[in-house]
Image (tube, rainbow, N blue to C red; front, side, top):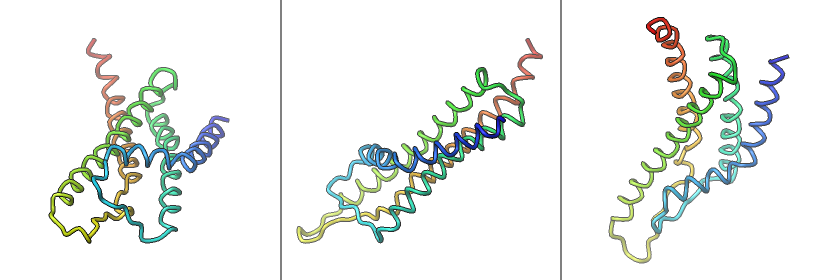
Length: 158
């Protein structure tokens, strides 16, 4: 019965991710700040694929949580909520750090003096925020697993 909740939550997160990708992308683009650099995309289908990858990555959160829950036999209300917060924090942090990196890259790009007839551009396909989000989720899961493995030792010491 619990497995149905994980499948339904994965499906719900997939739908939310698919339809909310544009909002996520706009937030991260606002962090980056374009500095008179034009964004260019190589193909229209790459935007759809990126949206699909983002939705799949969000739908992986229940699977990561399920694996941690099975390893450490935790309940949602006590330790599970902390795990999800840690995973969301690190996912957001890694995406923001990717935005800061691209911001620095665009600052260097705009510092180059060009003639007025040339327009600076940056490939939209090189942002890859969704992969950094996934990496952040995985790192957050590993950190919360490490904290949960330390928990019995801390209880024994007290």
